[in-house]
Length: 95
Image (cartoon, rainbow, N blue to C red; front, side, top):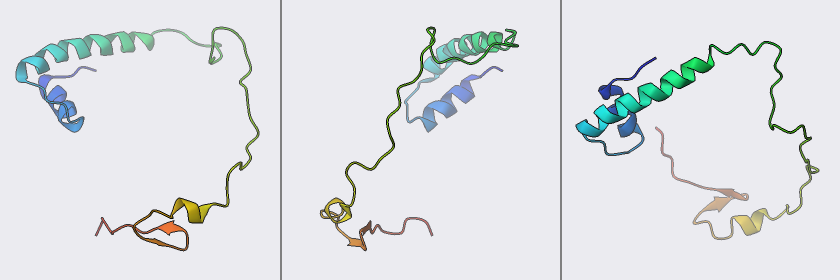
């Protein structure tokens, strides 16, 4: 996979980043180099390798899933401009 300057400009526009034509040309080369490294990872044989989250074997610390501060819906919506039955009321955005 490779990108061209038009793709860089499109992604920059979607990310709301201002990019000049010269910057897009430079970024095109940089992004293609990065994508080349990522594509090399597909060549690695990982058959039989288990996924890991750390280099050192460890178990993740877990906490009990309990409600510690609930039943305060009225306090949550107290400063809302509009609420109904402990829910926020917002203007309709999508027609």
